[in-house]
Length: 63
Image 1: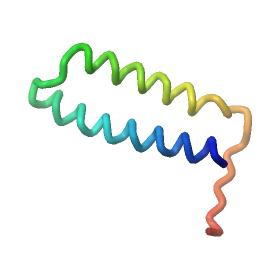
Image 2: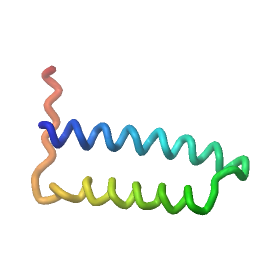
Image 3: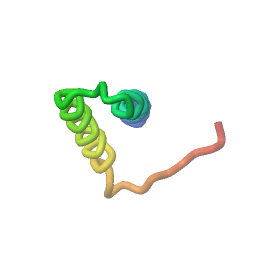
Image 4: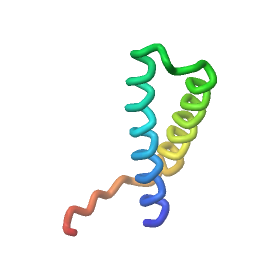
């Protein structure tokens, strides 16, 4: 479960970064370096999401 929580935090953090990037890109204020850093973080998130691809996803809505 700890890895699920870490993945959730990583996903939310990346979501926030994407929202910020979309705003800054629209105003022409996002640098090439920032784009590359964000791309690296997206690649890292994708790797984390694929890490347990062989395990079934079980959603427990009883909480």
